[in-house]
Length: 495
Image 1 (cartoon, helix red, strand yellow):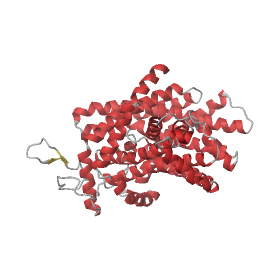
Image 2: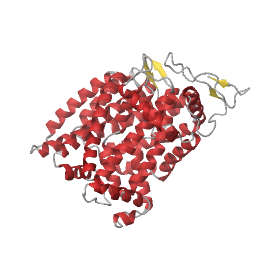
Image 3: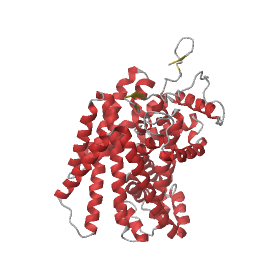
């Protein structure tokens, strides 16, 4: 089974998939006049305004809680182990292509969040949305089957990359700490830890998006800020190595052989590794973050889209860059040509600050991984609700808790391969939908610019005037904004 999955994985995450991901990112950037650059100062200001979770109106979770839930599912072991692997396999230049992927991913996730808020629905005081609703309501009901396929993939991925692999990372991190103090991990101990984690998952997911948002709002900032502060200490102590680290990244992007001594064979290897690890890290293109952002109580879709862009910026440009610079400045030799993983990151931190930092790295992995379980738990719930209705919620939560208990004592290598293959399959319908609904995205952007007095920056984005607001701020609900239907008689806007 592992051999078959490996072949499918190679096809799904091959050159065509990477071209599609980058191509849609470039297309969205051009069609929105590089919204991720034009709106970036406003997005930063909005991020700090929402830092305390202020709501604009009733219903749903706060915009900052929605952001933290999306970040919880995005920021994880890939930011620590994935970056180290990218450096070792693709050389320092791979980090440059991760930056490029992150810049393009900002506009992709911006579009996912905007359209998810645009087409969301309200049920029982909560907003439901995501790519499946965008496909059904944006593309039309004849494409509802595409949303069902996406939701099925989402449920499978929630059990795999969103649960099994993360719980295994938590157990491994705790066991590493036990070994460091002279203890001996055993099967019974892993089973007890798995039972505790399963109970926590059941209790937190049962509270719905509100409870998940409150936990991630606390968990993600603590884990991310602590990790960044420790990284900043390392870089201050190794400040003299920073210029050479940046030179290695920039020169290695185009001539990796010179930087790695020939151990990284070609430019294409560096490009492929940088782009693929960038996609795995920020998940831009998969559409799952739109499920979290759709739950925010925000008055205009573009407002939440700006936080979606910040999500990618924090994940790829800030946290991944911190990991890469620490490794390059630490003085620890990078084993080019092999996937070093988390051990390289831990060795780099401990070489500067001491062995105690291994406990901190293990704790960071545990926090990031558990937050990922919660974020993906919400994604799985929404996908299950889309397929089977609200009565499927409890069944999914029970299964999700059971998977956590099982994988605490199981090998998850095959599960990880299956989950990442499913992730690749999720990107195809999502990216096609984003490209098809770009005119709608442009109209929402120009509507937002008119309301906020923001300059369009390069001309009118939408040639068809909007005659009413895209969102009703008083109700904090989408009142089905006007959408241009080119084939409709009389060329009128329809709801």
